[in-house]
Length: 332
Image (tube, rainbow, N blue to C red; front, side, top):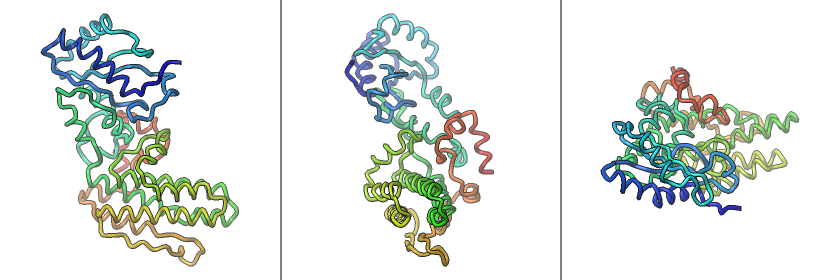
């Protein structure tokens, strides 16, 4: 079995050992950048030996200025003729493009307005800003910085939306269990858990990946107390334990909010849901506090539905940049 080398290291090593010396020798005046961004487990550093069974190669991206893309075919032919087709046991190739081409292909265009930000796939924003640029003569990192995280009002809108969506089901987990619907109770618990986890990404100014790596990325936020309560809630075999843990998790995420100092502190109080034996912290109140801090009137008047990226496993809908315009209509 060939030795596993994580994708970023494999690509950077191939670039440094073969591509860079070749370019310096044959195209000494060429201004370019090189790296590995966009798609794949290796972009996020989550790759392992299983990842190598498809679409895996030493394949750095060579970025040119738009006005020099006319030499792309010439470069590709030269690379094919002079660079090894296999490197350290893996297939090798080079993608030659420009950062503007990548952005157009991957997200359609740079988001300009808050509503446009909401229509862009969060997972794709992560792909464009993760990975690594090995050499940067074209200042691609400046473009990546512009996409590094949501603008303030967009972040606040997404936070308010998550607390509001949690509020819609905050009493249902216990209520379903009380009428004998254990499956329904567990499903609702899992949905609330996911929404709390998404809040944590927002508070930490991190994009969340799609479902395959969602839990892995959450673990790397190093919020052990929240992680432990969510885990206990998901594995609880009694509704008493499940309710206690998921409410504790909500309290801890509310405390995380307060620690971020982005609004006046939440008053966090565990109490009965009206006259029922159901414990809640009335997260709809939190949503209202956050929404009041949104300064963009257009965004402030939008329904608190969050973004398509915050609904698990809708990749075929929100991962296609051609659908951005239709998605934006949700916020009209």
